[in-house]
Structure formats: C-alpha cells, structure tokens
Figure 1 (cartoon, rainbow, N blue to C red):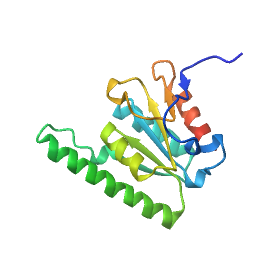
Figure 2 (cartoon, rainbow, N blue to C red; figure 1 turned 120 degrees about the horizontal axis):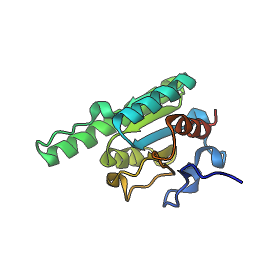
Figure 3 (cartoon, helix red, strand yellow; figure 1 turned 45 degrees about the vertical axis):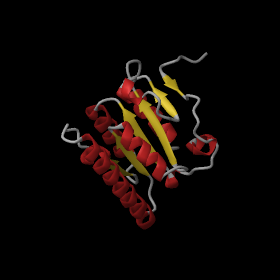
Figure 4 (cartoon, one colour; figure 1 turned 135 degrees about the vertical axis):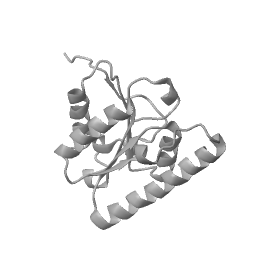
Length: 163
C-alpha cells in the first residue's frame, strides 16, 4: 500500500515523450527540469538542495530577470518575454558547449509559456503548490507543497533527474 503525500502526474496536453525517465526517451544529460509555483524562497532552497546533489547540472534562475513592478504592463510583458527568450538561448549555448542538464526556476506563468515554446521536447515541468496564477498551465507533475516537506520534494526531483 502506498501513501499519497501529494505527488501527482496530472493529465495534460503535453506529449508523452517529454516525461523524462518514465519512457527513457530523455537522458539526464539532455534534460531541462523546470520548477514553477511556490515562493521565490522555496524555489531557491529547492534549487540549492538539488544542485548540491547534482554538481554537473547548471541553474537558470528566471527570478533574476523577472520584473514585478507595475509600470507599463505591455512593455513589461514584452521585455520579460524577450529576456526569457535570450535566457533560453544562453541555456542552448551552454548545453552545446558543456553538454549538461539544466534546472530552471520560474516565477511567472508568462515566462513558463515562453520556456515551453523554446524547449518543446526536452523540458519537464513541475508545479509546486496550488497558487491560482498557475491554473490553466501545463505541467508534467504537480506537488502539493502543503503536504510535502522540502526534503520530500527534493527526493521527488532527484527521481525525476534519474540520479
């Protein structure tokens, strides 16, 4: 008998070939693992724990380019999308040069959509928590952050990374 601790593999419109190790189509070397939802601090702690256990991985913190000021929404949205595309290009270049997997932390649904468009096949998306702003987005996995500790979530990410 297994105990449900809040890890879910939701039905989504994402193709099955994106499910990382579940069908052995992606190797850890080619993987892009994206963590979305939760708070900035939670994502930062999960990334730190994950990268400590996986020193060969690189980290793209989209929080570093996220602008959350309320100046002009149209300009901010365009600039954020453009910055995210540039960040994705940097990930491509780094992966070609260093042949390494990448962990991406994402603070915004708009940024998530851009990253999913830039990496339609190799991205595995994990939603942590149940913040309403992420409703309607496609994720491969969802984790109930209220029922899981950081250590449990870290263990789940470790399994996803096939380590």
